[in-house]
Image 1 (cartoon, one colour):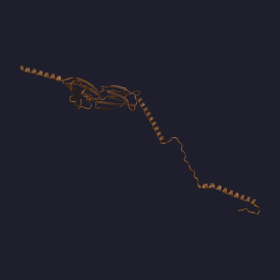
Image 2 (image 1 turned 60 degrees about the vertical axis):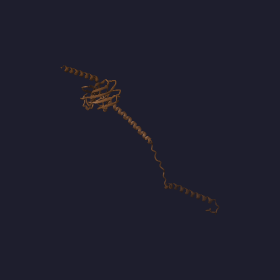
Image 3 (image 1 turned 120 degrees about the horizontal axis):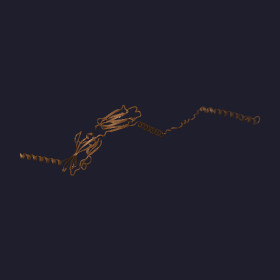
Image 4 (image 1 turned 45 degrees about the vertical axis):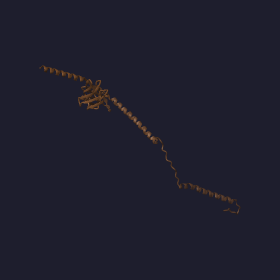
Length: 306
């Protein structure tokens, strides 16, 4: 009976010794709670220890499989199992043991464990990551001068209403990161002089904004008119330069073509005949006068030589 009691005490002592040894070898700190914004990068640090022989990161996300990153210092070797390209060492693991998650998504939520091994044992640091989704509201004017209200939140989708009331068109888009975007376009024909007001209602967001799109629409029309005016001027100058380059004159008189006069032989004959007749008549008269003069000067009975 006494021997059995001694054995029981000895067994309990061994159990206590083993538990103390395990606690010494596997020192685990408390859970650190972290948060990261959706779509941004975050870094989880691991405590530095001396004489480290191995560093291991283990991720246990809510969705997906476990990811393991390990660095063996004595072999200067890294190992990566079931980890996406977004999850990796922040820098060189031989001197920086921090883990970096790029472009955080909702599936990254969960527990992360950093295990450091040295001559004193194994040291664990536990982290719980929560992904924050900041609700977003935007109110702007589209290209036609119509107010557009947009809200991005976690599911369920936000509700959008307008003041004054409008037969607005509503569009809902779901994203892989667990968020929902709701877009509403104001379609009222008259606002009675009031600026349209968008009201967004959601468990994480309640916001109201107003906007005046009439001035922006007029400004858009003015900008279009100015651009068109410049284009017309540039095109006109280019056309004028092209025509001038090709020898085209905008103002000139047309010189009539030179006409070479044509003369016919008949015209020459007509013009010459009167002169010829006149010369012939003159010659006949001259000869008659000369013959008369010679006869008067000759002695009587002598005839002029022919």
